[in-house]
Amino acid sequence: MPDGFALAGADVRSAPGSDRPVTRMMYSDGLAAFSLFIEALPGPEVTAMESQDGATVAVTRLLDDVAVDGAGLHLVTVVGEIPVLTARRIAESIHRRPPS
Image (cartoon, rainbow, N blue to C red; front, side, top):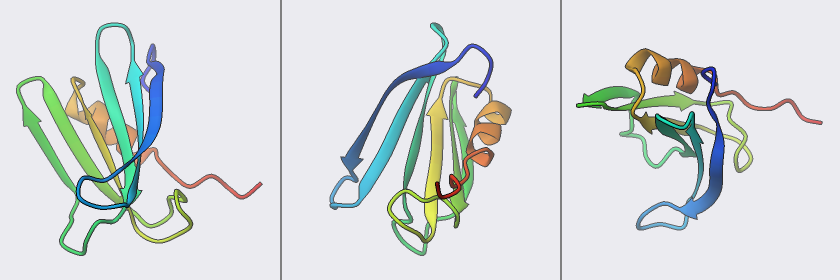
């Protein structure tokens, strides 16, 4: 995580229009904030992307090693009012935890 950011909340919800779980973690430094979403790949047409609209950025990355619900391809998305490079680094830092 970028310096100064701390977990402000987390939950697991269903993706809109489906029963697929989406893990959401919200981080803040008291001024800026971003959300991190992890979900099983919703479809084969989904690709990695980066977008910016004003101060809000969105970075999506496909991962095949994120153990959220077992295995398989997952989608990691970072959305917030942070620099694109920071959002990209956050998305790229997400990896599966080793089994305990």
